[in-house]
View 1 (tube, each protein chain N blue to C red):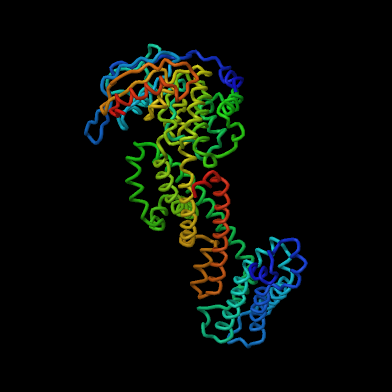
View 2 (view 1 turned 135 degrees about the vertical axis):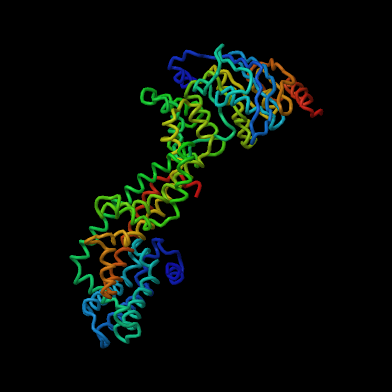
Length: 264
Length: 335
């Protein structure tokens, strides 16, 4: 596993571990001429190599923020900088992983993972990276399977491999474990932390799950109801690998839940 | 039938021990089918004709030979493994075919209830194949040339337009209303224009067939491309895909199930207009032959030709199914 992570990094990458600066970002959707504000003056700096979790009530605009950082959409106001330069379009160095695996159903797992390299025309030179990525998520034996033959957890692992094969400097995780059963979820939480620690990317995770946030992230940002503003920020200063029963994490979880309006 | 065999055997058919007992078992439907086919043969030669049709002896010989083969199979089929199982499955159909031929022969040639020239006994059709074989073969060749040119041109152009309509907003702004206007107009209504625009009547016929097969492909391809899950495009763009990659590697495969529905519809429509397309000054062709024979009340020839056309159409549909199953293997989990 460690060897394959190194193999994935074999191709030199100019940008490693980028930091992200979100400066005064506001965003609104245009619904048939009716303006729906979703984000309001968000200021957030994510340092290179950090793992930040965004928590907030459902529908508050967390996912929108990720789409803006990925470059798939442009903010209505404010700017988002990656290492000082503004993000104007999507780029394979910043990859968004969705709640649904969104694997292409017509392609095998191997070909799904190959999408990024194929789209950029480097598949022929870097074929070996596909197998390394599949190894990394434990799906080497399933390269020839079609997505409909995979379980939910395996499909989400394949989606992670499809992102990681591009050696992203920034991984944007939009509730990637949201639809999985609780046991698969626990396993994948641990794998996600392991991947992050090994592959040295910056990660921003959107989640509903407070326990997941404190278990994975080095910093937790709590957002308000829509339009989302930053409500509170918590540093999680516990060493990895963490344990979910760690009393400090449990205390922190209670504190965050209280901020979200769920006093226990 | 296999249930009956199991019941007779008192154990599962196909298990090694049951093989010994199987030779005692007769495929009863096979015997009945043989009897039905023999009845058709007997009716053809034993009873006098109201009006003679020709090829009666040949027809009787074919049915008798079929009956003999079926009788033989009745004893052998239970031991033929998978081939035998297939045969046993179609047993009721084989009975029905024999009975149908016998009844058909009786009501037309023998009793004259369904009179000449409007109806023909089965040996009448057989007689057409025997006497007209060279001409029919030429007609088949001409029709296949017209159909394949028309269908492939229509499908190719229709598919490309469909992808463009589904992909490009500007193209769809201008194209969709026009398609909606042209779509419901029967392809044959364009005949007057085609006479003016095309240098030869053959080119005009190809155009009519192409139009009939192309329009359903266009409509379904465009709706297929337009309805592709938008997150697939987000994934593609995020991974560094160009516009061309999004179309060719995402929109095209994702819309393939829709495209195949269009292809099936186009295939049927193209066959429906073949007869009319061959009105346009064709010298040969199955459609032309049908019209020619209709004019001279050669209805037996018309029926015989229709049988050929439906067999060709059914064969092409089968081919298309094979292609679809191969290309849409990934869909298995969805359907």
